[in-house]
Amino acid sequence: MPMKNTASHTAAPIVARPSSPAPPIAPVVDGAALVPQERRFLGRVSRFLLNVRDPDLYRVAQGHGYTWSEHETAWTLFRRASGEGRTLRAATPSAARARASAPIAELRIIDGFENLWFPRTRAIIARVVPKEHRAAFTEAFFRDLTQQPLGPAVILSVRTYLTRVAALPTSGMPGAREVRDTLRARGLTDAVAGAMLTRLDALELLQPGAAPPAADNGAEDEAAAMAAQREAFTALKLWFNDWATTLGTAYGKRQLITLGLRVVRRKGAAVEAVDGDDA
Image (cartoon, rainbow, N blue to C red):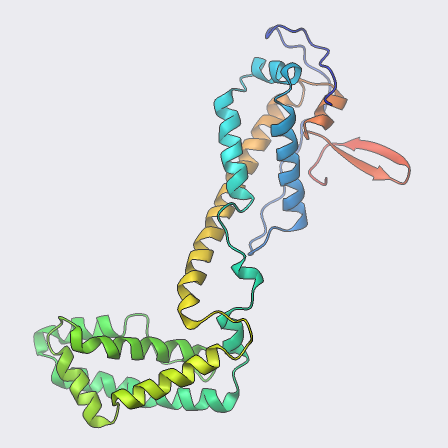
């Protein structure tokens, strides 16, 4: 239970208490998961948000401009910074890990396919597609698609290539069907393309529990969610530092600890209250 505030039960004036303001929280470390220091910081914020609702403590904060709007803003940032909406994808085996364990012999076969058909396709496009559409066609087909060195990255590049080849017959771009027909005539038949896709699928699923190839979009979603979490974490730090500074002289030492504005460091049997974020 929070300690009873010794200040007057009226909103003004507020009697300042001697105490050092909390120093800024250390910078965020980039990464998929929060580091221990960051999780301790979230614990301090939750302690503040829960305990400042006490009427005596809130009355003091209110006298320094703390409103319910500020309170709700902090809860929103806290939920997002804590990872609300993020999945457990990062904790499960991924397709990327499965690709990393692919046998080198299989990768050489896929790399050979890439080395054969990427330049052939460029040459066919240059010949078959009408001149006025050639540059746009080439740019669209090979957007973010380049030959990769021997390694797991060739799996994704060849899969992307085959997906675009399969879409040619139904494409509205001039010359698209002619490009597919020419590729078939040169040896890239539907059967050959299907056999390569089967090989790619087998490599993607080498590791038990690995996500299927289509989960690459999930990786992009997770990256976006992680970035949003980090953005909220940074905003929450600024919010907390603002109010820790504003209220750092408004309460007694025990009240500051109750609100998470000061932390307790234990040294053996002794308990020492210190300013800082090392909760």
